[in-house]
Length: 501
Image (tube, rainbow, N blue to C red; front, side, top):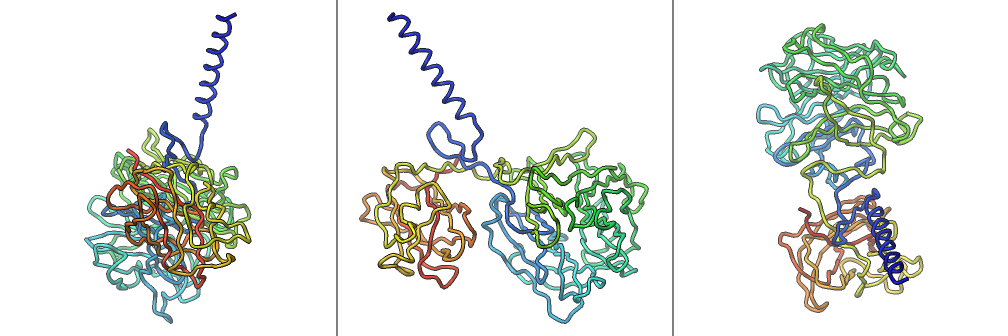
């Protein structure tokens, strides 16, 4: 009996190990390593809740993002595209009113040409039939600084309706591609023309793509949003958007230039007969289109950025939001975009983005606080409950504190090594704009790590890096200013982390 008992125990241990191993293998947005850290290595789409006609370019270690905002040109600067929601907005250029380019600024694109920055955009005077392409210039190294100067209209001799301008550099010649039509009426075609400098078209235009397939004519017969994509072997492709942007079946098509072909010869462009990226209801991707491209931070991966709607029904009221996903290349040198990644499902960050190992807060506690909201159960302990949907707020406490007397101290239970701290803002109002972080070993003597700025976003984890790795048991959060007039700020979650390898 003893031998049987031992074998049964051994079998139970094996089963227990197998179960534990199986649990760890299950996909989880918060993957844990062997030390119990939560590994922050994924993100979910959409990366921001807005972003019609998204564009991104990478220069000097930063990504610069822009999208259609109608009345002005705005830039966002970030080191990590998966964390775009945390980037601050920089108003680059606001047009003078009463001009032909004062209204309906569409599809801006940022390009670095001849050692200067240029932003191309379509605009009109309030009448869509008057849409034309324009460009502004900035000589600063960082396009979020310096002065943007209008260089003027970018037009071919016909001076017809034009939107969605982009630039192709090929064999020492610069070209502009855009979408044009008869005062904005269908059909809209993709045109190309030579350029003599970043603001001047120097040839007649040539149509290289017209809507000829049924999937290019849903809602209206439209080819628009041309985007240049160069394959690893150097072949030139143009990815464009087809059909009306307001329909669920808005999609991406592909033009490929023959090897050693002439971009100005329409016969040298080959159109793929089927769309290369389309609506996918299961993914929550309706009307995916008007895209751009970028490389991962380590330059090893190709990524597409595009907009889509999360719900069916089309229209302007069903907002377009920006999404990103990695793509690969087919054996024939054409891009393989796959299908839109499902919204809300964790996917690996672009290669080269920082991986963080976040401490679990199961054994943490709140050492002290200035006040808490007892009426609505928005207690100080909510700050470390591993749920960004629960908040710590002080508005309805018996002695609510105001800036800068608001504070809360977290006890991590033991001395831990940290490279930074994680904070998440609550949804709605009363968001913190500036916060001071202090650390201590004994909850008595405190050292300030400085003041940090938080982004005005809902329920997004924000990682605040410190200059030098530190060891402490306690950290104190002292909100100093808010984004609105509310004097009782709220936070959703707090944590600490070390950098991953």
